[in-house]
Length: 219
Image 1 (cartoon, rainbow, N blue to C red):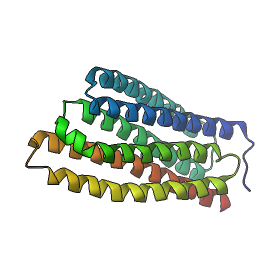
Image 2: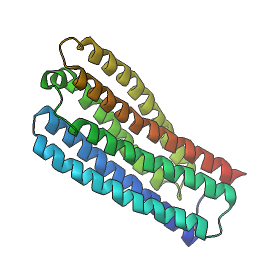
Image 3: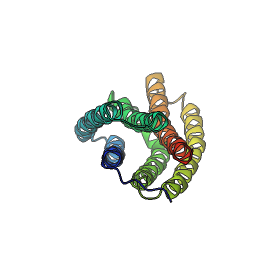
C-alpha cells in the first residue's frame, strides 16, 4: 500500500478532492436543471445555471493554485506531470458540465422532443451522478490507498462505457423525431448529448491519470 506523509503532497490531494466534491455538487445541480427544463421551469433552470458557472469559476481558481504549487515546489518530474494531467482532467469535467447546462438553457428546446427523450436524459444524468460520487471516492483514496483508488476508477470506466451505449441510443431516438421537430432543437439536443458524453469521457480520463500516477510512484 502506498501512502503519502509529506505536507505539500497532502495539500495537493486535498485540493484535488475539493475539485471532485465541487464536481459532484455541480452534477446534482445539472440534474435538477434538466428536470426544470423538462417541467418548463426555465427561470429556475437559469438560476441553477448561474450556480454551475460559479462552481466552474471556483474550480478554475483551485486549478491555478495546484499548478502554482506543482511548479513552485520541488516535485519529481513524473509525479508533477501526472498531477498536472489529473488536474486538467478534473477541470475538463467541470467545463463539460458547464457546457451541458449552457446548451440546454441557451434557448427553449422543443417541449415535445424533450418529453420524448426525458427518460433517456434522466437515466444518463443518473449515470453521471453515480460517476461523480465514485470520482470523489477515488480522489479521496489517493493518499490512503491508491490501489483501491484504481479499483474505483475501473468502476468509473464501466459507467463511461454504459454511457456510450446510452448516448448512441439517445442520438438514434433524436433523429427518429427529426421530421416532427424543428431542426434547431434537433441540433441543440445533439450538442447537449455530446456535452453530457464529454462529462463521462473526462471522468474516464481522470481514472487513466490515476493509473499513470500509480505507475510513476512504483517506478
